[in-house]
Image (cartoon, rainbow, N blue to C red):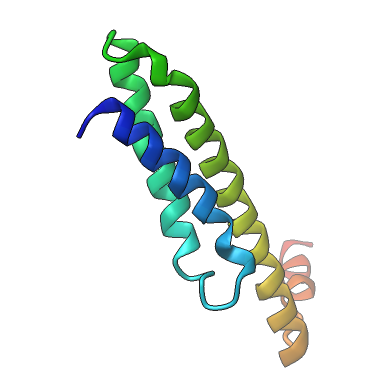
Length: 101
């Protein structure tokens, strides 16, 4: 796979990682954001070795979008867990604070 292709795949996967807000695509979105980071880092390492340096901005864009979508996915997951705990009546944070204090 060429550096240009890896950079483009990184950018596309980083964009698809924002699918966490689309119903039923939220299960695939974290995999896309991780793939965006991995392909971007692989492309950037080859670019730093001097292979096709003109694709650097695309690779960096893929890495940035992958990191942003992955962190958004973690935030979304934590919000879902808090909502689930409050719906089921689990008082997780109070139990943790009682054990610590």
